[in-house]
Image (cartoon, rainbow, N blue to C red; front, side, top):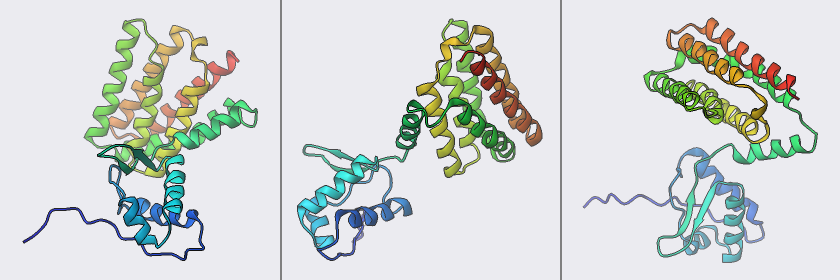
Length: 240
């Protein structure tokens, strides 16, 4: 008789003298290899103790470390346990935000990084974006236009457009980098200094980028994305 029950990942035991960081690295291997996916529940504390041949205190310390770095979510109660979280850019972005606050990084350096990175992404998007990617970008621009009509500022929507372009090339590393940067922009840049013309022109530039991607024109997508980020850089610098 076959069973549909999901097989629990097995971990090799380690010497008792090793620290929780080794357990952390073993669990990370399972997560990064895809054997443990977002939403999956880790084996129980008792099972982990037996798997790793170690103590409950050591297992709890390892779980705490993984929770702190954002790889696990610990839920209490009857249906609780340690669950694998979706990997996101929040922790990396918060680290860079702290550097910005301390004066170890400035907005111009972030914008320069975007100028080096995002035009190339737009160029690749014009080659790789599928129908679903195109649809998401279209919806994002339409939503920004509605915000303008309602006299609201589509700040996060306009920034999310850049995330969607990065997502459309289907490269997890690049998507992580871009979402980290855009998260810093949302958290640290005061867009209230930009007037309505600046906001409206941003949407118009995004429309040009979108059309170049939709029509599979890589060089045009590169040019329009560069122009967009350069204009934002100049507008922010003018109001520094």
